[in-house]
Length: 360
Image (tube, rainbow, N blue to C red; front, side, top):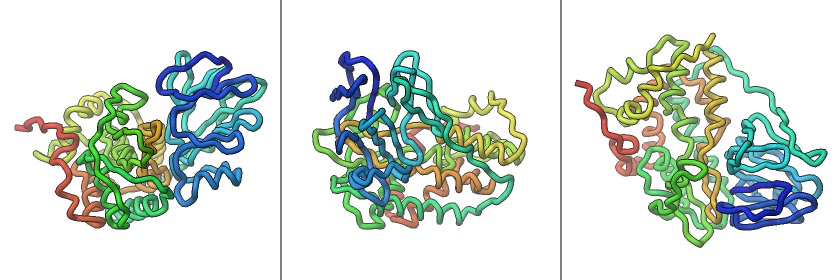
């Protein structure tokens, strides 16, 4: 789901495949976009048909992973309620694929086109968080299952569904939700070879010439309490040292990944929080701007964990629940056990097969 709108008509290279000249600007798109009455759109909307939503000129921010570009007057861009892709702009250009001299537009902001150029608009109120209102481990499991099943059940598509054989807890959790709902899918192996393109995740998708939905676990680490840095920030106001918690175990699903990717980052971290609400707000802002997957050509990537409503709820988890999840992935494993416990055997012993460094 890549686009670029600019005031020049020179040809653009990969990932763009289509050029539409309209008034004083040009729209570049990758494959897979649909068109209705000079409105271009791509992706999916949970609970309703994206095509019917566009026909009704309904541009409200609904759950899903989609983009709508309205060219009937001045160009306008509308997205789902979490805006699953980055946005870059300068006065003459806007795109979700980085270009030189571009400025980032964070998720709580947008841009608008007026007076023949793009302008930054800070259009949302900041999310507010409490210093208390903790929720239990069991409530977290219930919430993840409810949100995951709701998204899977209300994904409206006639396309075949595929899911990667990633053997990670997030992908397997989505697979288990599809199993629970008896929704058919086909397991596939990643074949895109798209390294260093837009986001690291594009190397993990399956691409062929047939339009399909690929169900994924993207954003599970970041929005379901398993990113060690984010959880380190959440635990700081409780005077809990996450490194000490990892030092208590000799083996866990997350241990090797933490040792390789995050231990040194946590050791050098100097972010300060006045209170619990502060830390929750910081993690929410950073996580919501951690963009990972936003469709590619004829592959519609289903990303049910890209769910800011779910993320906000889970930020209220009590400290013990956060530790269990970030060290052992206990919440994720219990979600899978509830939805299809047979799928536990699909998961690798260590996240991303990262070897644990001996603690002896």
